[in-house]
Length: 189
Image (tube, rainbow, N blue to C red; front, side, top):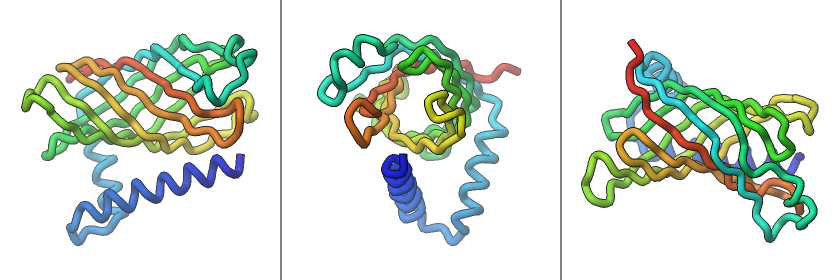
């Protein structure tokens, strides 16, 4: 577990430093973080998340483990989101899904993505970013732990296929691609 925490910590530092270096305003880092979270929290746009797939990398798992794992997770999630002046997506979310052992796993946090619009279309986007989240699992005695993870999405209009990669540090752990559908509901008021 210590190796995994080190990887997450280094990933978080990398993403944090990238965001800070990319923005040359004189505002403090803490002020920028608080402002992003506040602006997102006060948005009146909501979205729905539905998990669809959990893929365990066959090169890093024993076949007997793969046979026993759940790769079609049930679950649901909800988030509040906004697009900033650059067209980047920010969200605060919670989701609950069945993990590989068919046990409910909660997760919640902040997510960010920037977009490439290959056809200069407002409707089709490819997004890349990260989530800084907290989760808890039965196999870790339900002790909450940080889960900074990369994000990738393919989006058309209000519907997205969004995925993350969960790294592993030893055989039969991690190395999972987790995918869900994201539907922008817009304002519910």
